[in-house]
Amino acid sequence: MEYMLVTGYIIGFIDAEGCFSVSIKVQKDLTYGVRLDPVFSITQARRDVLELIRRAIGAGRIIEKPGQRHLHVYIVDNMNELVEKLIPFLDKYQNLLHVKKEAYLIFRNIVLTLHKGLHKNVSKLKELISKTYTLSNLSSKAHRRRSINEVFKIVNSHIAKRRDLPGER
Image (cartoon, rainbow, N blue to C red; front, side, top):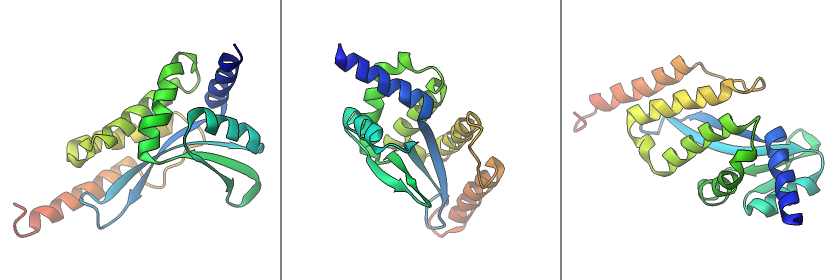
């Protein structure tokens, strides 16, 4: 019974305070000029609560929040930990998620698609970029540096450059 209470507490905490995000990193040396980086995080003043969650999930790390040393951040950003630990844990209890369920399902889809390597296909990458913006739009706190059209222009310019390279036609 105590295990279920702790698990219910953790899922409730994630539903209230968890953040499912995917950053879009622009890098000129990448095939399509962008990389998607999924991150699950929780920011909290009390480290002990984050330790409880980290132990239950069996993944991630806790750091001091840069610039705000009174806060701690629990982070799961390792692809294997996301796929092998976080997603199975949340899948098991996703019926208890209410506020963050839609965000979790989009995040889950992005992570699993990346893990399978399907983002190496340009149309799948563009689909993931669109889902990343959909995920951002679910949060009033989310802010993107670039518009989705700017990101698509970056991808398209890398495709055009690849076509111009010898042996790439």
